[in-house]
Picture 1 (cartoon, rainbow, N blue to C red):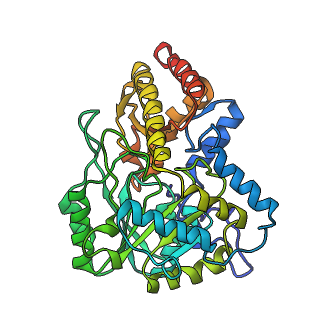
Picture 2: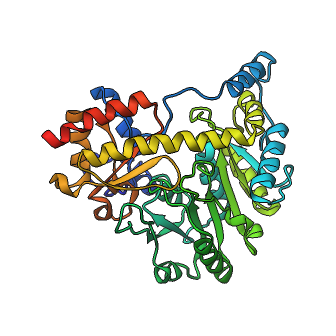
Length: 408
């Protein structure tokens, strides 16, 4: 994730000797996840690194997109989102979280939740502000904070001692991370990469820190419907005192298996939304118009769709977990999202990066080195992450290949 500043002889400079590459861009690397996808393609490996399904999206959503294109909904949508989609988002939030949202003044549709996050950070931060981030974190959050001019303050999620245990944080460490410069905390629940689902008690503790310090919560809820073992997703915006100080980010990618459509949104109070919309307008102008219309159809699917979604992913989780254990991994059982974090200590490799490279080249399975999810790489040097949003055939073939680890 974090790289050394470019000060070598190959650094591009202008005639005055000043570097042509920005200091911000020198402070982080390219995406490790996307790089592992390229390596999977290069070596013909099964891609359990990047979190995209290798099975079809729901047919009714695809038909809605096709119909929208045929109906010539192919020009700019309203910058902050098609009215049909914004009303569908508001209705869905009301139904699932009990929070009333004004679709005209409190929703900004973006090019995926990735853009929604950076647009939100750019809208609220100034140079010198601090953003609290739990680690391990989805790898975009650190660079997003840097690009927005903020300083990330990392708080560690500690792995459980037992496979069925919960990842947890030290309340004292989190409390001390909030200070006079804190502008916001980024919260991802269900969490990528750990699969942690934050409990009500944990969210209330985070709420108390936000209220006491005057900070915002930027909450990424992209995996809200992918839950296991009776886990329940609670949006922090639904807690007392947080409706006015939360930016809720979500999107279509994970719930509807359309990661390439790039339809996401940010939900916030009118004052915050106004700022987010201005940034969004000059970042991307708007998200794809016909896919927004299809999004309105997706968000109107019956409850049974979400039940089947969770059941299907639980079956995939429970298919890959024993295969990883049989291959020699120590696994941490996720309660949400579709990733499994593992401990690789028993394989005898010096670090996670060399192990991941061995895995993709010699075993034929792509994973993500755990260090890419931490500000301090040593915290993840004995971890790798696998994605299980794949067909049974893909998971079974990955399991067959992973068994080679025991022989090697």
